[in-house]
Length: 388
Image (tube, rainbow, N blue to C red; front, side, top):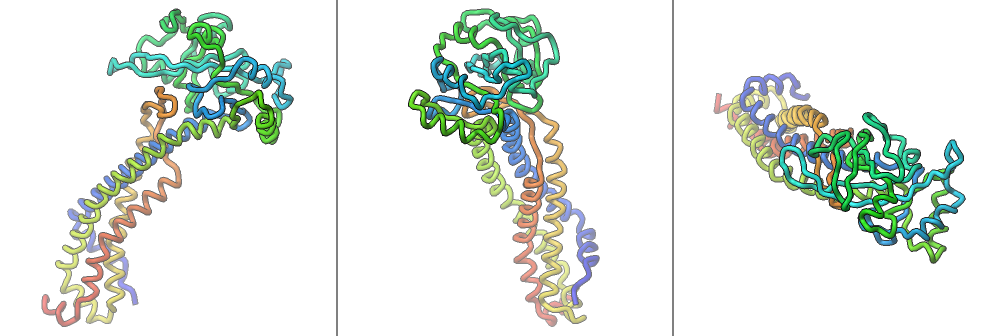
């Protein structure tokens, strides 16, 4: 015979002030835990969505990003002859030789400089990145010092707008367009002509070569060709894998930080739940004696008090995740540890984070209520009834 659940709910309502305080403490812990996991997930989602599974990226062997990579003109010419390259609607090869450099721009609000990715692209780059959408102005002309900026750059940096000029590489670059790349990392970049960037920044090699596979299943064939050609000291990755690797270090750091903070905060929440449940036991000694006299066993008492504590954890989890969900409306920017450049992204909530948040809340409720529940279940009928 189990104690009715309504009994537990009535007792929580009777002690609604302590219930509210305990739930609030647990909710705060879950909020912090979920928010930092959402931050790491948002970073990874932004970078992973930047790439396409049909695109492959060639970098210098051992390079972990385009910023430190180098692909010679000779190697780029060899790659252009690969038969696996997809052909565009006008008969052009969907391949782009790109140059990536970092420049410092002044952020709005703080007036502090921050690194921004300047990407030199070819005439076929937009065919490889269908997520790019021009929203203002026009596309830069190839062979000119015209550039276009991503929406996140326009929002976060000073003097980045149509018809403004950026001075870098001993040249003035005119902004003629603004593009939107959705939630991808391209929205945090500035694009221009690859040859102009190579001349201005004195580069004698490309940062990367990217092409679209005519058949996604031919990736292994391309990889084997690279490994067996001594002229091509290059690494090849699917574009999605490349950008996933870009987020790995930062995401791991955020998760470790989140878990560390959560453990510290959770100790306070668990102690709060324990105090609440010990108080409940002390105030309900007579009730416990009455329940035992009515035939309820020690196990029933133990389960009843554990259910109350778990319910507190459940409420804390729901409230914490509810408020954490609003973090998805916020876009923040930080430095990408791999490229040392500014990257804007949003918090992202998914089912895994929800389940982890709820699981952690229930764990806090269980640990906080276990000892008080054991104490309540060990009371003898005689000792408990003496309090009546």
